[in-house]
Image 1 (cartoon, rainbow, N blue to C red):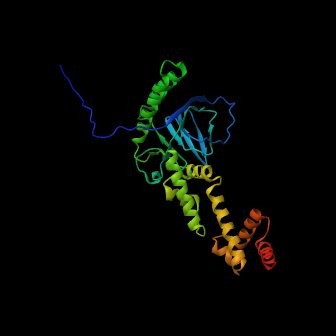
Image 2: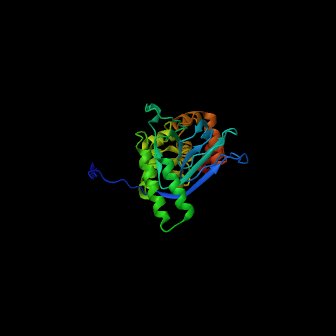
Image 3: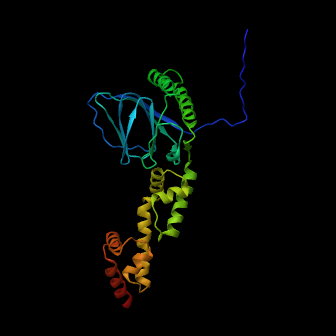
Length: 290
């Protein structure tokens, strides 16, 4: 009798993700579905069971087909379109509590089918994995709702994530609220200190190693303003100070504060204060003389 025993190795810590499965949706295109761009405050996994079509995200459009998995990070505008001749049949998971990182996939050479859209989505083919089997078990559990089905589905989600992360170009970013607030404070401090520099969402994302869409949403929740609007507000505040305390020209102030042009500075200043920079300076000078 042949007998082979495979021992478990426990030298590495087991992986666990503080993510929560929100829903499992099955859909099949039947000609009555209107494609509309939308977004969610959580991640989605979009798995194509059969058919063909295209996926649209943040201005990019790319083909999808059988066994393709599309990962959509939080707050990313997206939708799908089906070919009428090969209707899309797909499963979607909504997952709260995590975002995916795939910043280096452009250089990947692993033979997978992949496509990026501004670093917001990632597509690759999962034909060689057992993903569809896990998804089917998950669907059976969530539809029958037998005892402890939630635990089964949550465990299946973790198995699915582990299978996905065997792709070297994927990783999961998890942040608790305390850490997220610390990172948002870091962004705020950076903007306060470097407001005159040329700063974009990509700059801030690189600073915190966060997906830029997720980062922008988190910062807006933390401060009440998007990073770009916060930067603009900071520049307007500094402009008021320079108009009141210096004799610098409007052009000089515009340049000092990092505005791309004097006309843009004047427009932004008037929109924020109701006055042009010249009107603001003249009104301050008049008050100061009294």
